[in-house]
Amino acid sequence: MSNTKNNPYKKPDKFTDAAKKAGFPARSVFKLEEIDRRTRILRKGQRVVDLGAAPGSWAKFVAEKIGEKGKLLAIDRQELRTALPPWCRFVMADCFALDGAHYTEFGPFDVVLSDMAPNTTGNRFTDQTRSTELFLHALEVAKVHGAPGSSFVGKIFMGEDFPAARAEVRKLYEQERLIRPEGTRQISYEIFVIGLRKRAEPVPAT
Image (cartoon, rainbow, N blue to C red; front, side, top):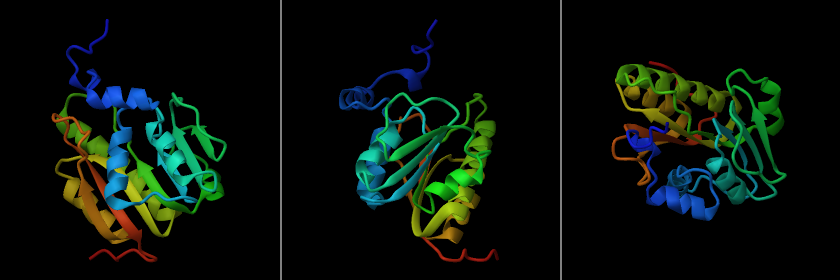
């Protein structure tokens, strides 16, 4: 039996309906659309990696933005629910256990994206801790495979580790921004941390 009635995250809203009408599998596309509108990180011809890409809304949006001269590597342990054009590759795998050759083949990346979230337990501290771990893993991918001057977008649940996670972004990028898109549900404590203009060398720890 569906638990949609008791789970507000499962209830359709105006963003869900709009995404469906536009051909995207999930409402999350509007979060990335707003982030891109406010930061202008996506452009034609870029190389992009989408970590935790399922169900595919971000990947589909990115593919349209970078065009056929760009390259997109989309990774997730689950299948996508949308088709991608020929200049994109989907790899069904754990993005943190993936052979580095995949990243090397498509990188270095101009943009590293992560909309990943843990399977929630209902325990806020546990969920925040797991979210931070995913965020820092994604940031490590950006550190190793992001090009100088590149951008990073990572979702994280706000909690005790949030300031430390932000500090890690500031070590790698000249500018760090926080964006909570309009499409974020009111009950959610997620936020997106954006790193702009990756430094050629990280700021040393103090």
